[in-house]
Length: 505
Image 1: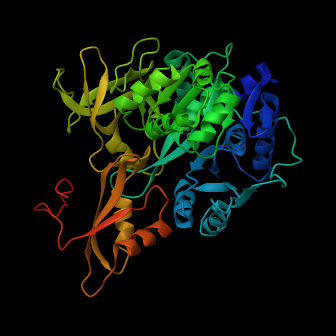
Image 2 (image 1 turned 45 degrees about the vertical axis):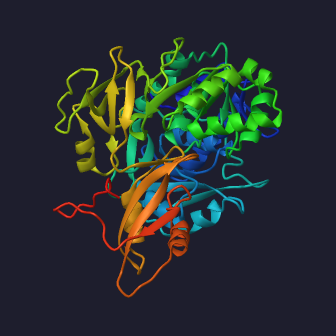
Image 3 (image 1 turned 45 degrees about the horizontal axis):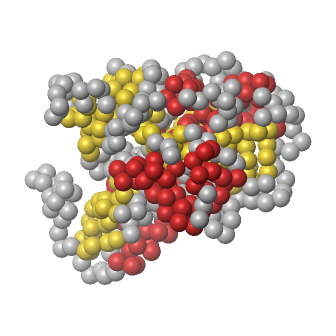
């Protein structure tokens, strides 16, 4: 069956008693996981959701996420996972842009009041007809009482399984439509790139946010594909992560560089490193370059070499990876994974000539490349040509075919593993009555890689301070997006055509 949910159908039937999900003291077998997802599918079909309809999901790393995710797929619908840090107007935008007809939302906690935001966003949406609340504690589940068996809806390989939202360097977030085959094949490649094996199931620490492509494919879907166990941690705290890794004998840890840095620092608390090292089979880093010192220190302390990879939401996400079983090349994003091609191109799409000093933009073709941007044919045509997707990332390739990122997309900011695109922030800042012009740039940061800074020209007759603008942005943007620093200038450097010269800023 083409449906991505067939991964759970197969594993649930083959290994029904195997532990699928661990959250605190709660444990769910694959049989329980499968039955709960079947109930979600029944809820949706009874609510009038049909094959191809879009269903949004806002939920941190809790058992609800995979249960609802696969339930949506079983019903033949498309999953639209949303960042849990989005504010109401941002959620409403995503609901409207994706044409979502139903929305599952975690009720939230005082620390993460997503439920309040979801209610407001749902009220501001156009086509969304159903809001299903996921309780924060004990409480009735939306699918309670539904049948526990369900025949997964058959779909085409080419049908859209998931819409993952990403931003271009201009404009608002765009939804990358990922086919069932895109997501399925990218999860199954774990067998080749890091030795996933259903006869020797792995235990994954599930701390990467599941609404993000890295956590969704490599951790969640990869675990389900090979009958692994997901040990769920809603928020990364190094001490808690180490405790869970020890308690649950975690064998696979996937994270962004700051997580590796955090784990190393937390070892000072007297953790039994030898036990951690004995359990850990593989460590995977992505999202941004892992510093060489962190790479070296992690290997020395944990006894495991970190393997690095590269990917984007538009590529499901994995594109390249270190060669499993070989000594990795520190600083390299590896080589293309099986079934994927990479090359370097110029501005006109022409291939860049091979050579030790040659650099170009990474272009990607293979089983992982998206169908296109939802409802944006022009943006799709700009990004994809003859099956090749332009990444916006500049790289070089060595004589052995290993790729190295030289620079990211010219305007994108990568803060703590999250892509932040300045245009959206600039447009919001310019709605402030005191702001005449704004340019947002990334500045180096020891912990987050880059921090967000706004350079602002004030409107005549208006005044505003740095703290005021930072607080104003914090109220209106997701926590990873708002600028932490503001600099005021009389003018901004520009080209003759009026384009702001961010390099000079």
